[in-house]
Image (cartoon, rainbow, N blue to C red; front, side):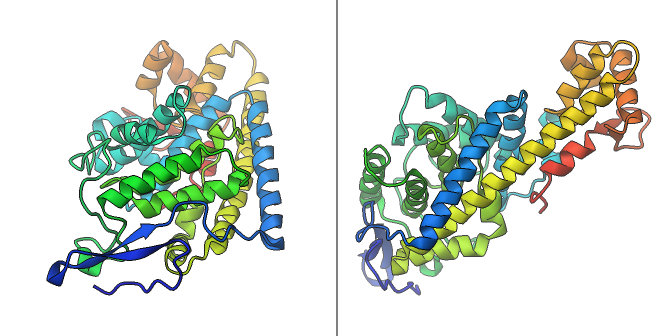
Length: 388
């Protein structure tokens, strides 16, 4: 196996495992915080200030919009999709929003649906648990239920060696080999202590360190990347940087996937924590800015379309209910929508026809029966960066 040379042991070191033809090297991470401590230069100070300012702005905006729960529900779906796409999941936003999702769910879609459930579960558990290994394990059960990897000990830290490398690869051609079982367990115990330590490390720097360390330890046989990215959002909530989960940086990692993996590797092999932290802070800045813009765009879209409905003559109760519904379900069938709203089919059909006339909705099929309609403007905002 060609092992990447360790030029600095600041982040850890490679350890020889087994002997003879069975031998390989596994990386044992050093406990956090790194020594020497993170050097905060002028560039990092600028990035930190900008990141905190934008995260604070995002948190403030999210408190002011009346339909934040709808926005969060949609944004969690987008984050779930992007995080799963990084792992190779072949699903699109339209797949996740398919009104027939229960009938049409395949393994790719199921991966994303489980991520949504896992995120919602983890946030609810934070009311009772700190950010800890127990929370990771319980969340992992939800993430892996009924999908690929469900046979790989859901909810348990691994009892065997894993590695990162090409599909169908092995320890001999692995790109990275995480610690063996006992050092992994110790590393996760150390990470748990670090997460809950009362220290003076800036919480955004600490978020980057925690994410790096979790990905390096790789405590599960599968699902590490998704749990590790979820951890960033959970940390933000625990640190009260955000009151609800409106910041996701998977789209930045996806768009900069090669650099993302290179930065992680450079920490392990060269001890370049500062370069990783700068990359991470840029991800926070970019993602927070994007989330602020998206909230503003969707809020303005809601106001404009609400006003267009308000300007119509006659009763508008059903139209307003339908508008609220499509903001959470932007792809619909009339029959299922009528059932969900507890209304007659013809009542919903007429309301949909009016929204189509206002160019709020658009028919996206040419069938006479089971016609599908979309809230296209809303979808266009959310589809950004989600295409395969």
